[in-house]
Image (cartoon, rainbow, N blue to C red; front, side, top):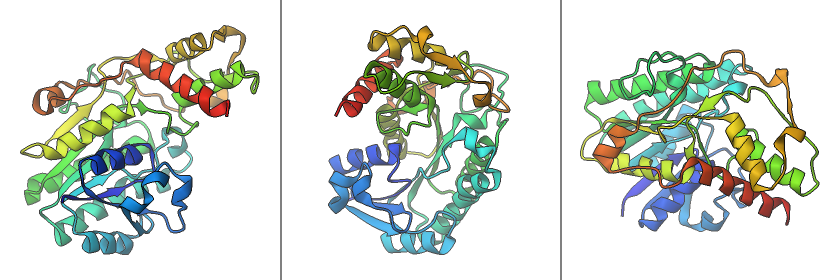
Length: 319
């Protein structure tokens, strides 16, 4: 039985990864904050199948105890301060959680279980303002926000440990990915839930920043499948997981409101306070490397994703 250790296990990606690994008969362990009530997470139905280890991500001793106790075969490092906009207000916290905690975990694995396979969940935000579109695994790092800077540190250190110590270290460079489990502070979920709430008479308007902002959005379940495939490959490498297509925030609005048969122009208001201080350029990923080496490709397209998010919101709000 393969033994896996997941940081960020209670999040969107972590919860889907748990289901994926349990289906494959893994022994699954997760790192959670002290006092976490598992019954109020997406892991509630699987709580008895998971070994939970408490600790703060910035507490090196707690991380070391967990890794030493578990002796994992595979480590999926998903935990992070995950909101890009918030990173401007909490730069030090973001760098500690998304950067230095990754370095600590790499060093712990090197000392305690050097044969373990390690996956770092990197981000398209490491590219910031790329000179080329789409981006691939060789695109230079040029982050434009604290979140991207912290993720760039983790990405570079993962590469360093792979090259300097000959360890099985993988960077999964993830572009935006969504699901019904995504918190509402993320734009696609915010939009889809608002459309559903307006349809049900629970909300009157939706306030958004830049409707022309573009991202490469995928379904989180497709991305999680890619994470597992990356650690099954015969050699460690970096992989971009993305749809390869750019879509605007306005497209999300149009599809979500169309799904509930409402004219979005009557309800969506522009709010300058929601604009970011520095907006990345066109971030679109080239998934060719993952497609060729891992036989990975998204199964859900953009339109299906947004319709699915909207229907899920309708079901939840209509309970």
